[in-house]
Structure formats: C-alpha cells, structure tokens
Length: 389
Image: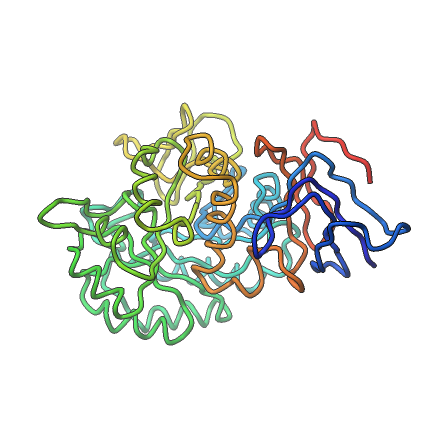
C-alpha cells in the first residue's frame, strides 16, 4: 500500500525540505517529492505542519507510573504506549543500580518481551550501573556499587538474549579499561557516568572505547581550570557524544549552550532520564528503592537531590529552541539522529530516509506535537489536533 504525506516542512536525512510529499510504502519511507507523482494518490494532509523523525530516547527509566525496575511486562507495555504521546518512537529501557540477581530478572523480562510491545519500539537495554563511585551517586544505591565485571556483563547478556545495547560505568573503577574493551568488542556502547574521574582517567576510558558521557554536568566531577574533570572531558574530547537533560532543572540553559557549542549539536544527545512520574501529577513516587517527591516539574530524593526527571523528550526539543540555544532542525537532530548514532542504531531509526520504518511525528511550527506515526500508521493524535486524510 502506497500513501503520501503532505506537509509544509520535512526534516529529512539530508536537510530540510518542503512543502512537498513524502512517500510511505508498506510501512517504510520512500522518496520525497515536491509535487505529487500521481493525481489519484492517497494523501495524508498535514498542511501547515512539520514532519520530523520519531524521537529516540536512549536514557529513560519509566513513564506513566511504571518503572523498568518493576519487572512487569504490563508496565513495560504501558511505558512503550505512553511514550508515543512524547513523540518517542524508539527507546532504550534503562535500569538502575541494583543487585545482580534483580538485574538478571529485569533484563530477562525485557529480552523476552520487547517484540510484544505496541507503542514506541524497544531497541535495546541501557544498564545504568552498578559500576559507579559514591561521590556522585545521584539516585543510585551505593550498596550495590562494585568494580566492572566482564562475567556479570556476560551473565546479563545471556539473560537478556544478547539485548544489552549500552552500559554506563565510572572510569576510575578498577578493571574499567579491560571491561570497556570487552564490551565494545561485543557491540555494546560504553558510557561514562556517576564518576569522580579526572580528565586523564576519562580520556583513557575514551581511548579504550567509551563514547558517551551520561547526563553531562550531573553525576560527575566538574570543570576546574586546573583539573577539567569529567565535564571537561565531555566538552573537549573528540569523537564522543554527550547526553544532556534540558528540563530547566538539571542544567542551566547557558551551561547547555556551552556544551552544545563546544561539543557540537551533532554530538549532543537530548535525553530525558525520565522516571515513573513522567506524565503523572505531582506527588510521591518510587525510583528503584528510593522515595521521590515530585513538585514544580522536578523529581527529588528526601535529601533534595534530583532523582531523574519527569521530562518528555518533545519538551526537551521545544525547550532548547525556546531558550535560543538551538534551531528546530538542530534540536530535532539531537533528539533523534544523534541519539540513534550514539548507540549504533542510525541504520534503522532516528531519521527519515528511504527504506527506514516510517516512524515520524507531526509538529506545529511552534513545535507542539499533534501526531505520532509508527510504520506509517497514526498511533497517537493530540486531542486538539484535526486534519483531513
């Protein structure tokens, strides 16, 4: 079955185009046309709107009152379906530091069921921990912190049906270099996080194959003029990606702008680090084993420390544009193409390109989400949006 999507603007693989018509055939993207190839063609009319790739969230713990650590398939389904309202069409369910046994169960549940979800597509597992250090622990349980273990990673890979895509560690921990080399050789992306590493330690980890800095500025040694630390490494080292949480609570917009200017917007990744309170009202929630209070747009532990976020990825895109630190094209790239590239998924998602699954979003020029499509089929429509098919 062949259809064409009409809109005023399209954010395509090789740049912005439009108005025009995007071909959708058998659930895949086809070619872009300035004029309709056939007068009798079936057209989905999004006049006045913009079409962008479905967003890719590579760091998300939960949504709609469900947490990945609940080890509950119904919850995983609810997260997947709820994310369509955020413009997310692909994601990496993200774990928290816990016991090896609980992590066995979590990754096994995801590995056995990821093809059965009906919403945003699960593209792999992100293990955030347990190989961290205490000083920048964030909302991670220090009881389970330990040195990187290849044996543990192999165990989790077995339980997950080889579905681990990304793992984070503190590079100053003993055995990190060997662990990084092993993981990367097995097509697992290594990220650096919750660490008090020096610039030299972070640089050595990158030389061994680590390639992502997790929620930059948060949970890491800061930039000092005599010791640039993890933040300095995230800003300055070549050929790495830097995640950032643009909710207005985790990072000041000026700091986000500094990172984007230094790192480049093609190597900066917008992530949410969203926990179960995403899409929910203020109140008390859990993040793993910790009680979290959600109020005024921020999620905090009893100590007052930030505990993940309640950010939706569509809002991160909008925030960076409204703050004046990114164009719409740059913001959408950081939330889709850059995300996919950071974990080796750019061959299958994160861009509008011929042959890719027709996963895309429809936006107003003000960057408000009006619809989300999976495989060319509208799966989410904002309540106040109307269009003619």
